[in-house]
Image (cartoon, rainbow, N blue to C red):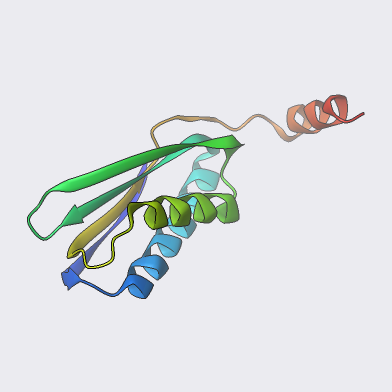
Length: 116
């Protein structure tokens, strides 16, 4: 499962790339929730004007389909690349490690047992 965006041309504006990554995280979170899945990691793939790609993956602190957690991770991955003058053509956020979301009663009982 993934979300992606191809720009019409070379995208040089860091604010537009940032907004796009946040939108992709929102789309991905919605898809995960609809499928009843959670992800253990998030990958950001950046495609440049010369068709080369950079891919970075980060494990999440806990598996989730929660959009704010996905957005924060995607934002951190993008910032970590330091793309100041890069000519970006596309961004994608595949989820490499997905699992079925446990039923609500299982999540609740796990939380209750982990608290002091």
